[in-house]
Image (tube, rainbow, N blue to C red; front, side):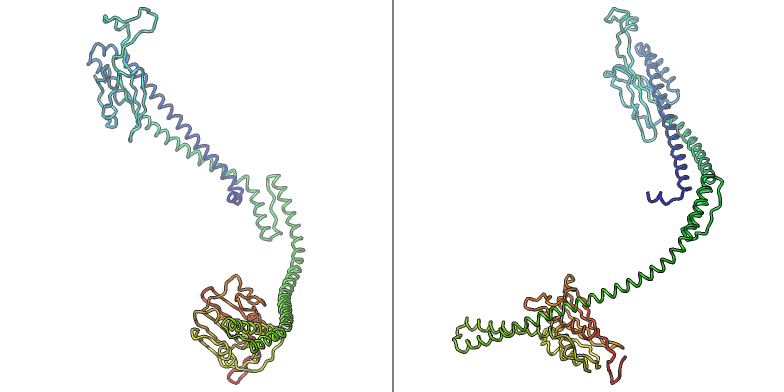
Length: 522
């Protein structure tokens, strides 16, 4: 349907007319050829049947009197007729008595086929297709009727002359006729029909082209007008047509073009105003989304900070009291047995772990501002690596540029320690950590890359959220603290990761007062 919906009206009309002419001509040609074939073949079959039955009747007397020469004469005389390929006469014992000469090798096998005379009660017919030609075989029985038997002195039962005569099977006659002449005639007629059909089709196509050109000339004018209007030329006018109905349509079309031209001018002005309004709205929406995200992050961090401060304050004093009480008991009571000593050590280790968590909560809650000063960034990185206490199975590769920048060195170091620690935790079996620091005109970049287990794609967007963690004994504030520190420096931090291949963190801190080589880089 899509193909037909895109063609022109002229093409559609021509396709319908041509299709009708071609299909009708083809159907008529096929019908005529098929009818002519059936007629010729039917005539040949009827002729073979009549010829076989008449020859059988003629051979009746000759066969009974055993006059073989006369019988051969009958056979040879009939064999000269058109389309007759072979004639054989058999006696009652299925033995061939006489037969015509054959020159077509395709029927040798048919001639050799014997006729079972004893089972023959009526004329039989058989269509025999061969590789090069087609044949039709007629086998007719030869009967000796009672009158003939009485004439030669043989008595037969029955004495009613009006009743059906009794008959005895004396032999059979087989005629093979060929369709070769019919096929030649059909080929000749088919060629003539094809030529006539082609001429008719060409004439019909030419007539349809002329007719369509005359009828569609006015419509083509309107089509051109629609195309020009679709291109924006509303001032184009379609000339009048000779056909009344189409001329009325053209006038209405020209009037519509004038109306559209006036409307377009009005819409163009309104469109410009709407575009300006849309651009302003999009800009405002983008700014609002950015502000909203920052407000949500700030509120989230503020809420988490307040909660952390409350929890740390409420837990620190009771925890210190519990630790002092247990220490008092350890000094006054006997904890010398192995189980008691192990329980005591577990208590103190868990209290220390809770104390570290409380310290992290307090650190997060107090992370509200920074104190900047000039410091060498490469020295901060080296100090953070030393503080990370990396095992021997983890190697460090550094590419550090020596320059000064005005930052909060303790906070930057805190962020780097967290990132290096996470890299270490992702490489329990060992690996490498790559750290690079580079300066640019208005910012410097710190890159930390590891060869660890990586971060799953499903959680990589949540790693900066406070209290989100995948570790069993962690609070989930490490990366949140890192993000907060970088935000306080008006910087950005990005992460890319592939599972089982490692992660890469990129810190970008914009500054206007970076000093390298004793000079100011701006």
